[in-house]
Length: 489
Image 1 (tube, rainbow, N blue to C red):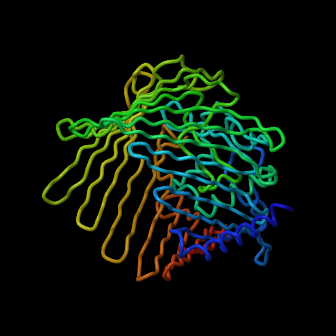
Image 2: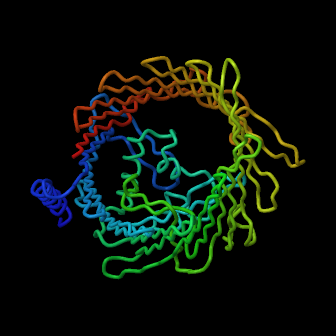
Image 3: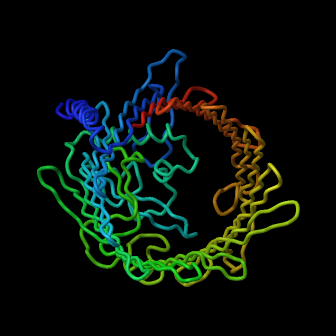
């Protein structure tokens, strides 16, 4: 009850402070009201990590589920000191609050972040046998959320990855209400809002080198009985005269991943590493990045990972012995011809033994108003040979005033049981007329056949106010709709 009264009171206090001090201090920010509607038959399974879906029958005249959210973002700058505050409140009341204080003193930059939320989820990024990243839940408090989500060290495909990362699998409105529904059903939004995390970022520039560190302190206990874990990421980075950038990182008591709070929406996600819990303040990972290395007109980016831990029961490569665990080499070469231009990008992934485990090539060409992109996957065979298969084919036509894109995903042996044929065909149409923007996406499970769903997004800008409306329609029902109003000041 206290949280429900606190949220509107907090917003009123901030609005009053803004109105009385706007002329005296450089305050800027935004206020966003987000309403998400879904049919009452929208249910999310809580037994396995599967795609949320509608179960049962949706009547023509049916009840709806409403999710309300208000996001308030404020920035205050005084004599080089910047203070930002992000607040999220819903029907439950105050759900999330983050305060960041930053300053630059000569060559030293300092940022200190304090996060308050009812819950915390620790998500570790692990790699599959092909070197692709997968999400799994390493820890969560005060409630265990495995199931429905996969617990570490699982490296199997996870819906959690698609619900958090905007990769086109789910519409943002769908991701919004799906994550909120799961966390609400599990009771992750009802505990008392308490101090959950502190992040201290330091960066120092000395003689062309940048020395930085990120110290993280996370609370996996309760308001009455806190339990802290800590870790640090130390890095050094420099650039040669030719423009080559080299960066080395040491992860102490931390691993690659992210930590999210409350319902894990984008405002409540903090990337750049996660602490290791239970506490183990030892070196867990080392990373080396080489970027912008040019050889004979080809630009190379190299990523090398070392791990110093073994996860019992984990799949490759997290179950390997400590040492080199992963190498990724990305090479990009521009192409230029009289009638068209483009580029070829090759991404090669190597395992702990430096043998290739996966490779894919992206070829992009531009012909006038048309852009063509093709993606080839290369899979290693047991014999050591590689199979090559066209995995994706994208055509974009961009004449003045409108953009039309056809994105065809093919069924490939390395990812799907059925080889050959069209797995999914997405057709995008977007246009802008004055202050009005229209975007749509039609999803087919075949080449313009097997229609599955239609995404529609409308946006209108009037001065400092933005209005957006999005919805997802399937063959049987209106799956979700979202109305957002944003005011900038």
